Amino acid sequence: MPGGRLTQKDRQQIALGLADGLAYAEIARGLGRPTSTVTREVMRNGGPLAYRADLAHRATEQRAHRRRPAPSREPARRPRGGDIEAVRAYEELFTTVMMQSGMPRMMARVMVALLMTDAGSLTASELAQRLQVSPATISKSIAFLESQALVRRERDERRRERYVVDDDLWYQSMIASVHSLVQQVEVARQGVDVLGPGTPAAVRLENVARFLDFVAESLARAAEQAREVLSTEAAGTDMDDDTASEPGHGE
Image (tube, rainbow, N blue to C red; front, side):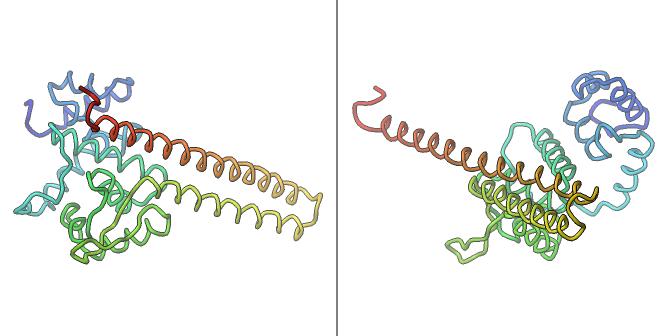
């Protein structure tokens, strides 16, 4: 029934809709359900390319048996939004996309939680409460994200350690990627000397080095340009706001 739990028949209809290339909204209309319900169901069970009705139904039953009593208070800093189900579905979708890019699931969940807060920062205890995991799990995830230059630490006014994401971190992450590519270029070119110039393997390694060298240079240039353009736009916006607030303006 609409509003109740998805049945096995509902899940079979979702699988058929995905196979036919239907959008989530169209599948949801056929079931008489919110689009967010279908989105969350698919993303929680392998995504649109791997979704199987029987496996999804079995996994849901297993989760229901393992589920603990709900926490007595709402997770910290739940993102604002008129439709909490849509926010949760989006959170699942965002996490899945990050996992598909190679990020481990727990690290992706922590990253998404930070990105979806207005402040762009949370403490370890806030993250643990929000994601319902142990502080040790949060610590391990933060260590991974720091190694990728995606998160930084700072102390707030209460001397608590906060984990922060901001615009500059994306630039730093891109530059870290450039450094990694440059290192791969150097190693590939060392291989050319070791294997002997002109051999098939050496030629292959030289082609790899040339390709990665070009990508690294292009990525570094793009990161610098994006940082410059976006910082200029932000400065212009701040100036417009200050001008509008002056007496005699905006009247």
